[in-house]
Length: 158
Image (cartoon, rainbow, N blue to C red; front, side, top):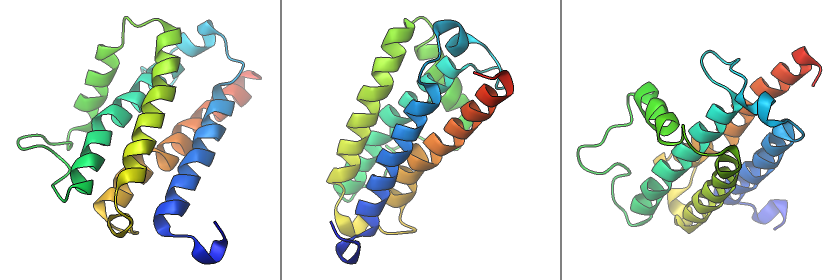
């Protein structure tokens, strides 16, 4: 796709893919002890991975609903208490082996990207709900946590 034919949706999905690759590079080469070390408040990198995949899995159906012209959240569901959602995502995966956490991040990212790609172009314009969900769960999220991990690695010379 040339720059002249680029769309907000295409740009957003491309940015998401680039930031995901950068995030993967941020964790590349770390061993299991590094990934389990608590250093971001009460979180480890393992927790960050579970958190990211949790939001992917929760918000992909929101994109599917938006693609059908529905509201993103099911009746009676609110995403206002982000801390409670984060705690839920971490609790759900607390006993998972690290290898499964890593695999789930890849799978959930892929699933989320498929859901994002299926949202009609007209619904993925700057400022729309779909645009904000896609950005928040991908590029913005990967950059935020990737930057934290890169800073942690730099401070530890890892």
